[in-house]
Amino acid sequence: MKIDLAGKVALVTGSATGIGRAIAEALSASGARVALNHFGQGALMADVLDSLGGDARAFDADVTDGAAVQRMVAAVEWQLGPIDILVNNAGILLEKPFLDIADYEWDHVIAVDLKSVFLCSQAVLRNMQPRGRGCIINVASELAYLGRAGFTAYCAAKAGVVGLTKSLAREFAPAIRVNGIAPGPTDTAMLSLDQISAEWRAKELAIPAARAAGADEIAATAVFLASDFARFYYGQMLSPNGGALML
Ligand SMILES: NC(=O)c1ccc[n+]([C@@H]2O[C@H](COP(=O)([O-])OP(=O)(O)OC[C@H]3O[C@@H](n4cnc5c(N)ncnc54)[C@H](O)[C@@H]3O)[C@@H](O)[C@H]2O)c1
Image 1 (cartoon, rainbow, N blue to C red):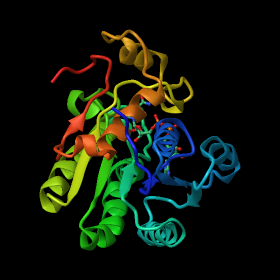
Image 2: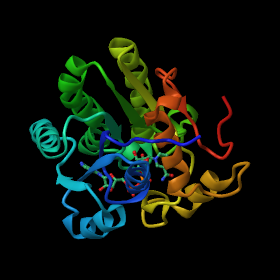
Image 3: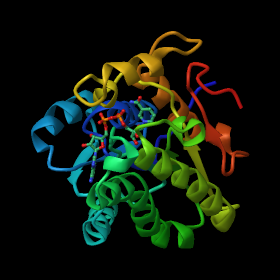
Image 4: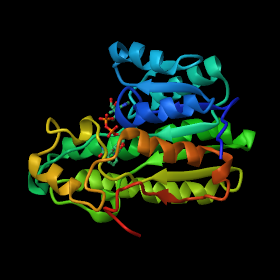
């Protein structure tokens, strides 16, 4: 089974690092021209673009800012052509007891993890719908289903992404396929001890696979969902999660 995305244009949000970078690399390796969104990480992007080669370009935009997102989508379509594949990947984590979360912290997590999916999808769909083809892939989390003490804002936002994915899938079918990925623990900065406690990291890794995924293992699911092999997938959340959650 060979996936060929030649001639397709893909926009991946939050692709300076981690899963987003791996998805951008995998889409590019499958032949797509890739637009890599980052937020003020220009210093990292030279290396990322080097690893992709070819037609890939970087676009700096805060995906929580509607005007910036619209400018980014217009710039991508101007420079690379109509967007066929949107991967809403950008995200942040907040580990904090529920009673200590400030309003602004809650709003920020919801903005990056959920509102960005609304903003980027709307901006892309305005042009994608009239063209009558394309797909959207939203990166949620296994925690959308499991919940996790100390991660309420993140889990709420990611559960929102699941609902948004299914509703968009129904509203834009059959021409446009909207699906998602609910990864389990993945070896990126988000799972590092800089960002989460040792206690939670240990809990995350106590799964049947007994390890975190490599970002490339999550990226493979994105490439599949972007391909024609997934043409009968609508509103599905695929879960490369090492057995953390068995649906
Ligand atoms: N690592 C895991 O264990 C894991 C598990 C399940 C889901 N996820 C999800 O995978 C996605 C990627 O996370 P990752 O693990 O690669 O971590 P990461 O921190 O390496 O990647 C997140 C990216 O989002 C970008 N970003 C944050 N705010 C942004 C903004 N306002 N505008 C544009 N970009 C922004 C960051 O700069 C970063 O490059 C996230 O949605 C995350 O919730 C990760």
